[in-house]
Length: 276
Image 1 (cartoon, rainbow, N blue to C red):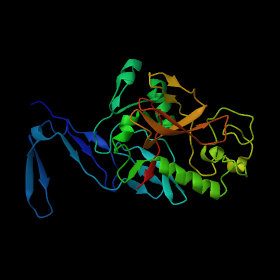
Image 2 (cartoon, rainbow, N blue to C red):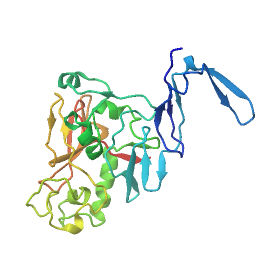
Image 3 (cartoon, rainbow, N blue to C red):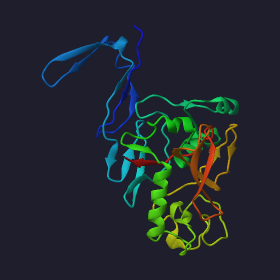
Image 4 (tube, one colour):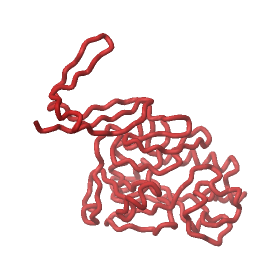
């Protein structure tokens, strides 16, 4: 008998993971579901495409787990709870896969959700930088774990306002230099400017927020990878500028500001999620 592969997606206070059980079902033609009232529901295995369970994605107060079982540290900044790591899921939170696109021409022609690893090197960059997603993946609105969402421009503005008002501004003046307080302490190319992200000056401000931004680079609309490792971090917001462009935030090792740029939706950028 030909075995059908069944995917189980768990997401309710238990570890969240996707797994397949072809060996378990080799001798089975029916899946029996035993209910609390003693009744049994028999479902032919051949008719099952996917089984999903939904619920809280929180593992504990300081971590969150995505549909694939990847666990992310979180950080409370003001009234917001942010992921303190870049998203790296290859599936939407309903279990549906996101297309992985490595070829430059294919990336350029994609008008639907896609992801890649920086320089197409999963082994080196998945856990270090997370995935790069085009805006079509962001716009699907189910990229983050259940109960979380891709940070909007408004979310970032709230973050910036809180940090400026609460002692995270490395310039200690009217200029908004919060980049150092957002950036991870390691991984950035060195820079000579006192308030620059890559500078070791003002150590009390280095990653003061716990946001831990890492310089994961981006992928251009023509498919080429840009911003070599150590230079820049680029985060999609969920906010569109117009039909072809959307806003992203970025940090650069040689600057101290958090900047905003509108780019083509074909670009591949990192994603940070915020709790609903």
